[in-house]
Length: 568
Image 1: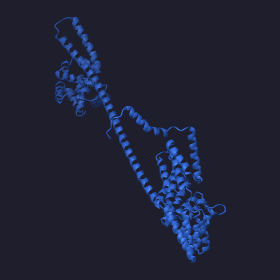
Image 2 (image 1 turned 90 degrees about the horizontal axis):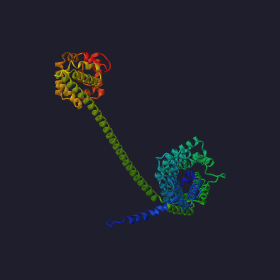
Image 3 (image 1 turned 60 degrees about the vertical axis):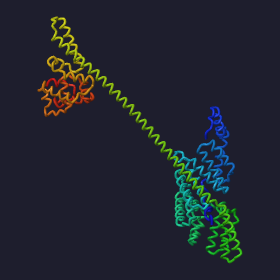
Image 4 (image 1 turned 60 degrees about the horizontal axis):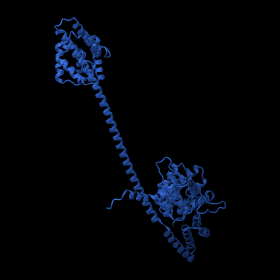
C-alpha cells in the first residue's frame, strides 16, 4: 500500500580562422549580444516592483493557509524576481512555485523549484533565512514520502529539524522531528517509529501542546494494530480523536486526513466488528480520495468481504485494488525524483568543489599578496636601514676625518715650532695661538678637555706611524687587520708598560674589546673612532666604556672613564 498512515497524522508543512573584424563591427556585435540582457534587466518602475512584492507577500500568506496557488501566477512571480529580486526574494518565489507544482501533483517540477530555492540561500551569511529553509526541506520530505523514497525523506526531515532549531522555531522543529516516524514506518522499522512518535509526544507535552502530542499517536495506532495490541490501539484512537487538531467540532476528519478512516476500519476488523469496519472503509472511499486513499479503501473492503465469505465482492474489490495500485504506480515519479535528487547532489558537489577551488585560489592569491607585501616591506625596511647605516657611516667618517685632520695640523705646527730657525717672536706667538686653537677644537671632539694638556708630553707616541695609520682607518670607517692590532698591542706594551700592566690585571677580567678600547682611549681616540675601528655601534662602544669603568675603577657610567684612564 502506497500511503496508509501519512496524511491523517501528518501536519501541514510549515508553510575558427576568419578575417579580423573592424572596431565598429566588434562594437555592433557586442551591442547586439548585450541588447537582450539590457532589455531583461531594465529597471522596473517603483509601482511595478511594489505590486510584485505585495503579491509575493500575499501568496505567502495564502500558502500558509493551505490555499491552492496558480502555477502560472507563481511562475510569473518567480520569473520577475529571478531578474529583479535579491537572493531572499528569489528564494521565496521559487519556494512558492514549488508548492504550486506540489499541489498540482507535479512532484519532479516541485522538487526542481525547491532545489532552485535552496540555491539562493547563503548559509554562511548572518541573515540566512533558516526558517524558510526548514519549510523547503520539509516540503521536499513530503514529496519523497509521496514518491516512496523513505531514505531521502529521512535526510530532508533531519535537515528541516536542524534549520528549524537554527531559526529558533521550536514548534516546527518538533513537527519535523515527529515526521521522522513516517519514513521509518514505510521501511517497516517499527521500533524507530515508536521511538520518534513517543519522543515527539513527550517534547510536545513539555511545551504544552496537547494537540500536537495527540497527532503523534496516528502512526502509533497502526503499529499497535500490527503488533495486536488492540487495547493500546483503542486508547490511542480515543486520545487521537479527542485531542488532535485533525477533527472539526462535529468530530469529522478534516480534509486531507481521511486516511484515518482506514485505521479505524482496521481496528474494528481486528476485533471482528466487520460491519463497522466496512462502514469506515466506505467512508474513506466516498471522500475526495487520492490514489493512496482509494488503494487503502479497496484493500480494506477486499479483506472484509474475504472474511465474510462473499467471494464476488471480494474479487470485485481485489480487482479494483489492483487497478488503483497500478494507477498509483504509474502516477508515481519516484525514479525521476531519485534521479533528480542524485543530479542535484552531483551539481551541489560540483558547486562545492568549484567553491573550494575558488577559495583555494583566493587563499593562494591572498598568501601571494601577503608575501609580496612582506617582501616589499622587508625591502623598504632594508633600504631604510641601509640608508640610515650609510648615513651614520658618512657622519662617522666626516667626524673622524675632521679629528684626523686636526691631529695632523696640530702635529705639523708642533714640528714647525721646533724646526723653525726664525727667532721672530711674532711668528712663535702666532704658532702658539694656532696650537691653543687646535687644542680647543681637539678637546671638543675628544670630549675631555683636561687630556689635551698631556699631549705635548706624549707627542712622539701620539703621532707614531702606527697610531696615525689607525686614525686614517677610523676616518675611512675601516677595521684594522689582525696584524695591525697585534702590532698596536705590542707597541702599547713597549711604550706604556705600567699602563698595560694595570689593564691586564687579572682581577679586572677585561675582554679583548675592552682592552683595545682602553688602550685607544689612552691614545686620544674619540668614541666615533673607537666605533669605526672596533666595528661596533656607538651604543656598544659606550657599553664597553661603562664596563671598563666599573671593572677598573669601581665607578658606574662612562662619563668619567677618559679622565680615569689618564690617571693610571
